[in-house]
Each structure stands twice: as C-alpha cells, then as structure tokens.
Length: 227
Ligand SMILES: NC(=O)CC[C@H](N)C(=O)O
Image (tube, rainbow, N blue to C red; front, side, top):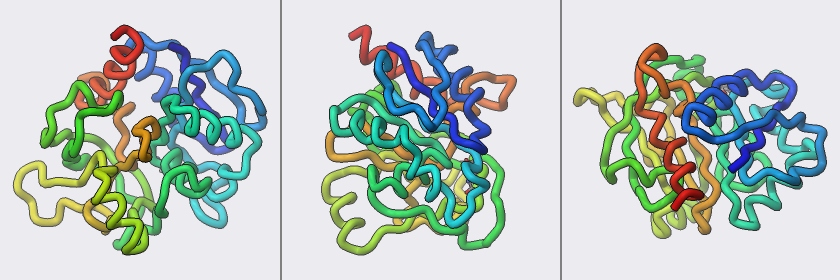
C-alpha cells in the first residue's frame, strides 16, 4: 500500500509522517500540492505544519491547491485519507470533513502531551486500539479548537463520527487543551475512510520521541491491506 504525503508550502510534519508510515511497513512518497493526479497511490496523508503561513485561516489557502481535487476524489471513493493537525485544518477548509478549527481558547500556541480517548475502534485507523483506551499524544497548534454548529455536532454524535476525544491522563480537570466542543480531537466521515485529528500520532511512534501510542494507528493501516 503506497501513501502520498501531500506537501504544501509550509508543511513541516511531512518527514515525521513518512517516518511513521515506513516504520509501520507502508510505502510513502512526497507529492507536491500542485500535482493533479494521485495515480499509483492508495492513500493520502495531509501532514501538519503551517501551509501558506496559516494566512487567512490555517488550512484555508492549502484547501484550494490543485491536488485537493484528487484528495476529494479519494475521500469519495472510500480510499483512506488522513489529515493531522494542519492536515485536519485543510480537510475542514476543503469541506471534506465538517466543522472548523478555530483559535485555541487561550489564544496561545500550545505544545504539550495530552490524553486522547479512542471512541471507536472499528476503523482502519483505530482497529489496534481498545475502545475507551486513553492515548498519550503530543499536540502543537494555535488553531485547534474544534467547532461545528449544533446541527452538525448532533449529527457527528448521533452517527458516532467522533473518533478521538481529549481526556484526562491523570485525572486532571483541565484536560481539554484548546476549548474544542464536546472535547473533540478527531473525527471521521460517514464512510469511515477519512480521519482528521489535531494530536500528532506520527510524533509518537518511537520511545526516543517520548512514546509509542501513535504507532498502532499506522500498523492498523497495514493490517487493512494484509487482512
Ligand atoms: N503542527 C501543526 O500542524 C500546527 C500548526 C497549525 N497550523 C496551527 O494551528 O498552529
């Protein structure tokens, strides 16, 4: 299974994404955002970073890149698409996932480890986790506050599209790092083939990085093909 790691001007987690995918045994290649075809690829990974310097709104300009039409096609065809951090922002700005990522409530760039609860494990991305398991993953963002209108939120909850929620690691009361509604850290689409999340699983795939809780997400993608 070959993954396209989409590079926008200002992407900075592209190499981390490649490291994680390859560590899990998957093939990955970088694809510049001006490409109009993802022929030969099975999945698309939109990495974190500051595409277009986060001008206008994080992800807003990258969402208009030529390659995004292909990413949209992948999403509709049921192929796996993952957007992490800035990648999640791009997916919402492109309308591929609902809602928006607003400025953190504290108005600070927040870089720390957080608890992230797995809400469903019937997706390729989460099949190797237990439902209810709390992962320790890093976040690093200024615009990570998940927001959606009441109707969209009700639909997300009603259809079980919330995949990850911020949760206490050690019983702390202030576990939601950015003010996301319903503590939402990651969502999927109706088909369950598109994942957008603010925490960085690709930065938690080796003890030397401080933890390995992100690795099963990538290993799960491998199982999908093997199984
Ligand atoms: N690591 C990231 O992708 C975070 C950057 C992101 N554009 C932000 O909201 O700050």
